[in-house]
Image (cartoon, rainbow, N blue to C red; front, side, top):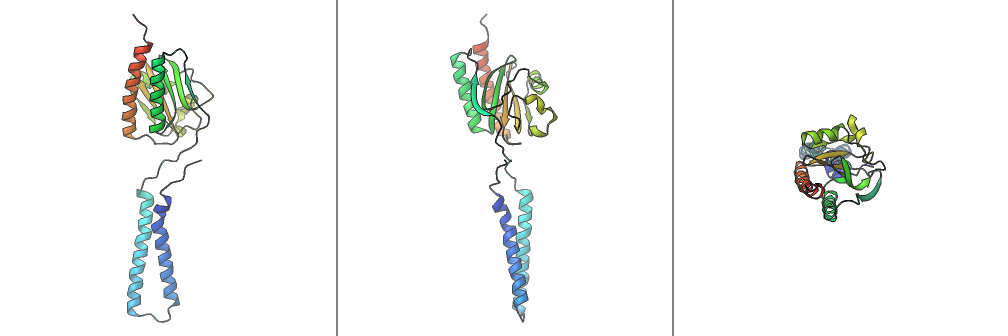
Length: 218
């Protein structure tokens, strides 16, 4: 279910106050048997103020940004790590994934290295990642992140069946030139530019750790 807009009442308040004031002015005019010049001028000012309030409320509906509608992702909460990972890398993955889940809109994530999913955390889909799809492959080949701001309207969403089926937004963030960090959000357009920069920095740190612990000694 979409989350309620916390600013809805505030944005509607000028419209409500203006409508009530205008209605009271009209009733007062109808119930007054004889109008004076002073009352006519006061009514005119009151009508102008009511109209300005209503217009302000209507403008707020258009100008003030609404918070993205969030959903409860379908799936079960969990944390899966490949048991063959070295303990220091397990600790690093646990730390990084915790930061992503608690400090961004991320609610599910998958870490891939050399084509293999080594970890996933958050709300998990019953379908595991077996073969990265075209979007993931493009992010890997170009070494550039891909941000799908509204996954539900994107035709290629079928390749992300290893994420909850109602995931709203996805970032495919390269981990160096051998891995990928796939993040799923519970709201469309929920990652800010600052979030993207922060995710990229964290991905660089993870890439160094994967490179250090999963590269065979020569």
